[in-house]
Length: 414
Image (cartoon, rainbow, N blue to C red; front, side):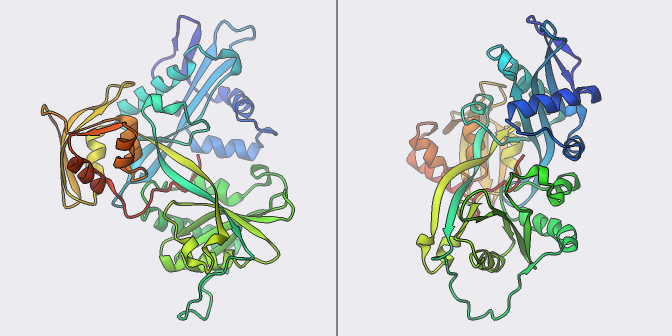
């Protein structure tokens, strides 16, 4: 982190210290509408996930009270799978808030600029975030990249198609030892199969597996885990509605058979009329049921946004579905990290070099973030007049190259 600085308006920017954390927790509880303060265990969980140096704070040196904390932002050090199955470091921007008393003073841009400086000095390749509002982060080059369908399943109508090759169940409820010992490994296997998937370190797993009552809404049960040799599922019973419903929080299946077996149990739960879940766009659940209308889509949500921090390295890091020759111009108004690049893709790999040739493709860096993992087709942005190609054939080839076998899905909220 750079040395503390003071803006002309007496807003001081600095990295966090141990002494700042009470103020940080208070500020974010207010900003994100917590009904109760974080417990001591939750505070420890948070401190274990992020270093002081990765937290940017803004204080008002001229406040009516001594140095009030008016801006908070931080990032987690994470890993994200890119198309092709390899994992790369990704900076997970989070806990971004500006006090309601200090809006329209450039605090957000000041914090984001400070964090970008840090990322670029470190040579970070990707930045990611989950956005509470959809209109904030595109100006900084982030594009929505992972999506989910929110679904509700009518259990009276939801019957899985019969399988003649299965007369015993490979699914069991997991014991506490099963959860601790087996589920992290199953999740790690799933992460390698899905672009956009986020790995979970031990510090991430600890609070997830602890499943503290203070971390779940009132009237919801603890997690029930289902375990399979090639996957697992986790759900809660929600008593805040009448009749009660099951809320599926995770289904991570490494194989299609595991997906079928886990969902067979979930749609067979007794005494419940409804199951809710958020599933990837390409999830085949609907077509494994005898009545596909039993699944209703109740919403579509963006689950993760992606910012490319180094365009040529990022283009060279992923696998592609088909060959491509293009001169791609990427504009980046916020950081000037775009450019014109000659891109040659053969046998799934890309060679990327700076180019002085006339571009055959033009896009903003936020658009590149959205198409990079395969979440939005290039042709969709072309139709929205946010991506230009010199010919329809170039667009077809670009679209085909960036297509992925599996829809991107992050799987971890941060």
